Image 1 (cartoon, rainbow, N blue to C red):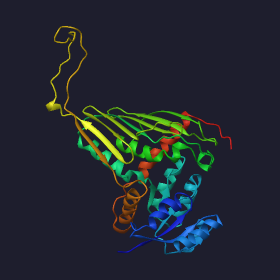
Image 2 (tube, rainbow, N blue to C red; image 1 turned 90 degrees about the horizontal axis):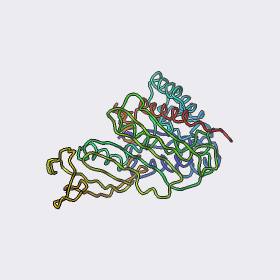
Image 3 (cartoon, rainbow, N blue to C red; image 1 turned 120 degrees about the horizontal axis):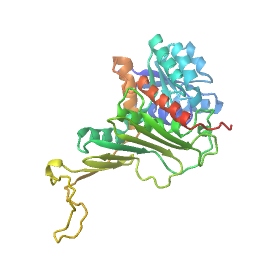
Image 4 (cartoon, rainbow, N blue to C red; image 1 turned 180 degrees about the horizontal axis):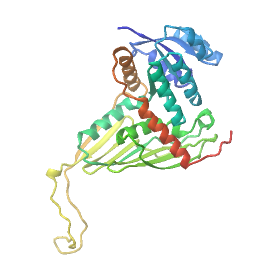
Length: 354
C-alpha cells in the first residue's frame, strides 16, 4: 500500500504530541513524515532527531518540494488562515488544526481556494471519531432513549492558564481552543444547514490573559433538542461530560465510561390526565407515582480522542486522497462553527488587553 508523504508545520503540543505522535506510532501504516517546519531552532533540531526528516524554519521553504502529499498546519491559531491559504495556492493538500479560522469570510476564502486549486482542505476535528462520541451517537440513534429533549456537553475543570491560548490576539480562549470539540458534536447532533438560535455568555475567571476561560452556549431550534455546551475553568465538580435527556430514558457519560437507562412504553402502566385529586387507597392525598421497569446499562470505553480517533481521522484523509472517499469532516460544516464563534463573540465583546 502506497504511503503518503507528510509535512508538519509546528512542533508545539499539537504538531508534535498529537499529529507527530500518531505518525510515529505503530497505528500509522499509511504516512511518512518527510518534513517538519518550526520557527524555533531547538524544536527543529529535536524534530530532526525524532523524525529523521528535513527541517525548515518557514513553511515557504516547502514550496520547492514536489514529493509532499499532505501538509498538516499546526501553527498558532491566529496563523491558520494565512498559512493555509498560502499552502492551498501553492498546490498542497492541507489538514488545518482547529480552530479553522476566526471569521466566516476567511472560511469561505479557504474553501474557495481549495476548490480553485483542486486540493483537499480538512479541519482536524478528530473528536468526531472519539469512541465516547461514536458510542453516544449510536445509543441516541437506536431510539431507546426516545425523543431527545436536551443534550448537555461539558468540557470543564478547574485550572489557571497564562500561555498564548489565553490571548485574543492569538485567537485564544476556551471557545476557539477547547470549544471546537463539543461544538462540532453539538452541530452534528442538530444537523441543520442554518445556524440555530444562540444564547451565550463568556467570562474571564482564572485566566491571566485577556481571552475567556468560561463559555456557555445554548442552542435552540424548532423540533430539535436543546443543546447546552459549557467549557469552564472554574468548575471543580465536573463529574460528567455528557448528560442526555430523553422521553424514555437518560444517559450520562465521561470520556471513558457510559451509563444509560430506559423504559419500554409497552411495558409501562397506562396513565391518563385527570383533574381529580390523586389519593392513596385510604383516601389521603398522594403524589403521582408509578413503578417503571428500567433497563440499565453501564460500559467502559477503550481508546480516546488522541489515539483511536486520530487514526480514524487520518484513515478517512488517506482514503479521500487515494480513492476519492468522501471527507467526513467537511469544511463547509465547520464554516458553520466559525459563524457560531462570531455570533458568540458579538454577544460577548471582551476588551483586548495585551
